[in-house]
Amino acid sequence: MEYSAEKFIAGEVLLVNKPLEWTSFDLVNKIRFSLKRYLGIKKIKVGHAGTLDPLATGLVIVCTGKATKQIDQFLGLDKQYLANIEFGSTTPSYDLETEPDAFFEWEHITKELIEEKLELFKGETDQMPPIFSALKVKGQKAYDLARKGKSVELKTRRISISQLDLINFNNKNIRLDVGCSKGTYIRSLAYDIGVALNSGAHLTGLVRTRIGDYKLDDAISIEEFEKKLASFATI
Image (tube, rainbow, N blue to C red):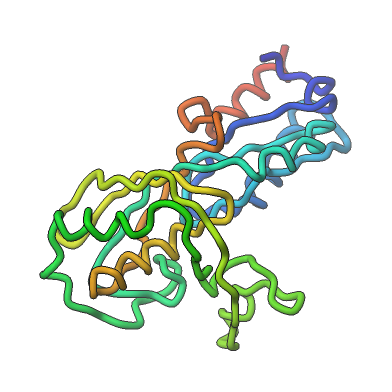
């Protein structure tokens, strides 16, 4: 692919590996800034086709220029994740953003019990989103209310989980390969699995590996992207 101002303005679809602790908005801003800096573009539209939590890494689809009109067609695609989950405690955010708020027994959990309970989550189910989410509550994002200690009431959402495989089980930690529909919160899945196992659980790591037919293996890092831009800018 030739990195030129004309191509990015005409519209490009980029597969990018989002760094840890970056928001999807941070990623979009960085790409927009880099395009302006290296290719001398004064104004260009850049948008992402689906958010990824700051504490997650992996595939984000980013569209530029006229390709931003295609974003809607990516939003409904199914997704795949590698999820690390720890038993024995829960957190208000269902992940590592917040400190544990409750502790539970976990020594009774076995590989066989995990695999048995995972079957309960396959197919279509109703899932309660985490209060630390970007869902709107009376015009405000749920996580803004939650961080202020305000009460947040959300409704369950119908989701579908097509794949839920146990990859690794070590002490009180597991790794899952999850294939799911749009709108699935892996943090909520982690919490619910903990409940099903008569324990508590929270998400300790998440990598998005696929969106539809687009794969993380084909994605570029933001550092690689900038290097390519710089090389074309100096030609």
